[in-house]
Length: 171
Image (cartoon, rainbow, N blue to C red; front, side, top):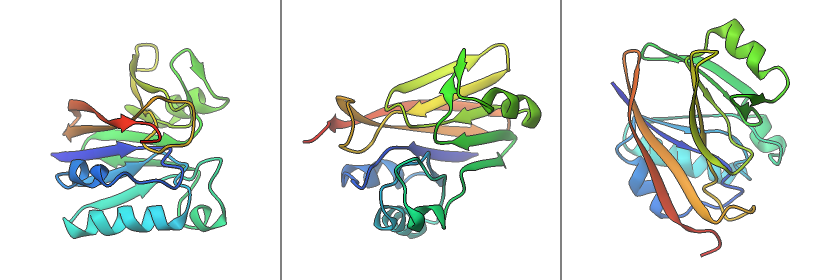
């Protein structure tokens, strides 16, 4: 079993409270728009301090420093779950161009994106795929509350999903 901490759209801001929510995680996943390398470095150091790993993709605001470290998309197996992460992806019924085709081709069980700053967890019955967007953990954007998601993957089961509110944006 793996415990996952999922965040996105930090936009160069990491609330110190984030780390207490991630310290029990085996893996930390970032769905893009880190902001700067300092953010990815801090997340990586935090992950290493408790034996976890950091995975992530670059987002549309990320510069060459992040783009040289992280790919545009990730497709990997976690336990028995095929995971597909890309920053701009849409959601069931309104996927960004190419996303639905990739989910089908890869037979993804879990599709994760960021970008919209809208927290969303929704199952796509047509593609047999769970969609997650953790909202935004940073201060930039129009969201009112900063959020992240924590969940577990045990074999093929995605379970124990928790939405964590970090507080109001800008505070």
